[in-house]
Image (tube, rainbow over all chains, first blue to last red; front, side):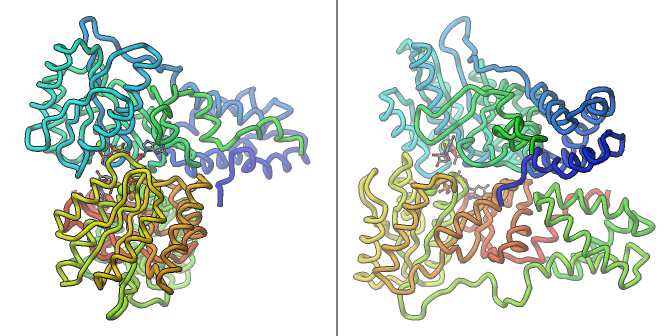
Amino acid sequence: MAFEGLADRLQTTIQKIRGKGKVTEADVKEMMREVRLALLEADVNFRVVKQFVKKVSERAVGQEVMKSLTPGQQVIKVVKEELTELMGGEQSKIAVAKRPPTVIMMSGLQGAGKTTTTGKLANLLRKSYNRKPLLIAADIYRPAAIKQLETLGKQLNMPVFSLGDKVSPVEIVRQGIEKAKEEHCDYVLIDTAGRLHIDEELMQELRDIKELAQPDEIFLVVDAMTGQDAVNVAQNFNEQLDITGVILTKLDGDTRGGAALSIRSVAQKPIKFVGMGEKMDALEPFHPERMASRILGMGDVLTLIEKA
Amino acid sequence: VKTRDNFSNKINDLVSRYRTVDEDFFEELEEILIQADVGFETVMELVEELKTEVKRRNIKDPADVQSVISEKLIEIYESGEENLSTLNIQEDELTVILFVGVNGVGKTTTIGKLAHKFKSEGKSVLLAAGDTFRAGAIEQLEVWGERVGVEVIKQAEGSDPAAVMYDAVQAAKARKAEILLCDTAGRLQNKVNLMKELEKIKRVIEREIPGAPHEVLLVLDATTGQNALIQAKTFREATDVTGIVLSKLDGTAKGGIVLAIRNEMNIPVKFVGLGEKMDDLQEFDPEKYVYGLFSDAIEKAED
Ligand SMILES: Nc1nc2c(ncn2[C@@H]2O[C@H](COP(=O)(O)OP(=O)(O)OP(=O)(O)O)[C@@H](O)[C@H]2O)c(=O)[nH]1
Ligand SMILES: Nc1nc2c(ncn2[C@@H]2O[C@H](COP(=O)(O)OP(=O)(O)OP(=O)(O)O)[C@@H](O)[C@H]2O)c(=O)[nH]1
Ligand SMILES: [Mg+2]
Ligand SMILES: [Mg+2]
């Protein structure tokens, strides 16, 4: 049931072309159909797919594919290049405030991986940048959310600020930042409760936290397995919070992760990190090219195509 | 509750925007389904069947196509089986329900909701804290236990989940509990070791109570795309999944992948999650669900 990658998908068309010995516009069209399918199966939003295929078609109908001796490979190359470009360059840098502490706020749907990623980011900041973070437990809704963050803090031997679940998140954040200043922490990471982008009350709460904390970085944490709805989520969170970046979690699974492309095209914000596991060191910089290959379902098949 | 008539009327509104049942019409239908994460293969199949049906019945007027659409979609769910959403509950004996699924989908929350449901039906319920891995997982289940007023059987964080299950089964027997709901840690289906661990958990339950677990419920997040199909397949191989809980349907995602799963694998959806509170669990109603798939398009048509 593993979905066919683009290379597999293109095989039939390529065989046909080889028989004729020349590539026509109709052949390109047929190949573009396969591109469309491959992207849809990877969960790229269908509107994004439409735009994308249009763009790639234009390039493909031109010299690059039609004059090529290896049209299949050429299509994949063009698609991959365009995909990679759309997803932006590598940007795993984290903002630094002129005056510490630098404030980082997490946001996202329920269960996306915010709390886990908060721990991972803190760990990364300390390990790679020698920073001293404070974690703020501002999820007062989910059962044992505070306990979860505290447990991670203990594992990492890092301070966690909490006021229990009877104080408003805005107030927790206010006091947490004060505390960070007192303790000379140079980073503050705010874990927030998961919420639906259509939950007006809870989205307002995030805006209030933003207003107060003036975060240097607002991450939208997104599950890599997200389907067509990723565009709605990204668009809403971005419109309401003006996020600074995206973190894609659970990429250690076998999902193609087409949501990455959807998010990128609607929010126009960089994907900065990817979550590669449940452990505290499983956070990696985002590589657009790797992601492009993944969405197209090709590990090393690229070199094999058209040889068979 | 939406009746079939009501649903058909709504689809009717949608199709009334078209003068003929043409390619454009089917294309829009295709897009509605793809947008709902139904999955391309299934969408293609469905639309092909619809086209054939429309031809066979010689339907020209879009208004007449509505009944065919709802029939076809709902058919997937009602193919021969009765009472799909009922659970396999043992009379006068312990019923064990095991929850499985990938990370963060809503397993623990669903257990809390279901415990509440059973409790309010007057049943004695016990929870097993089989997620000994994730930070705060045991405490999370304990909070649910307190909320609902049921006991949680647990061991220390990091202990063997199979041992927790063994304990829980013994405790359930000793207390003559009627329902035992077993939580497990979230795991991605491509993690072979973790899937083996799940098989072991299930074996321990089977060994202690022949015929148990009586239900293995796979929780799927409605926002998940095509990967849910692979989840269903792999979890079924490991644990003989008997039903699906589709969580987070209160968001804007439609969870259309369950149509594809039903189409290809015949695993029924038993419940849907509609929020984070105790009462936010409903038995799956295919009619209502299919209506939900089209709700955006219908609203658009009404504007
Ligand atoms: N395999 C894997 N699991 C992850 C990753 N990131 C998070 N998880 C798991 O996903 C589940 C949910 O993670 P949380 O950090 O609790 O998610 P959250 O967004 O804080 O959830 P809420 O606070 O309930 O909204 C947990 O089981 C995590 O261990 C990842 O990159 N890979
Ligand atoms: N909106 C909404 N949120 C839900 C629903 N079900 C669960 N959640 C939320 O989703 C998040 C994850 O739920 P959990 O029950 O912890 O999920 P889990 O599968 O046990 O997660 P792990 O044990 O980490 O794998 C929590 O914030 C829940 O409150 C639902 O039906 N609707
Ligand atoms: Mg959290
Ligand atoms: Mg859980």
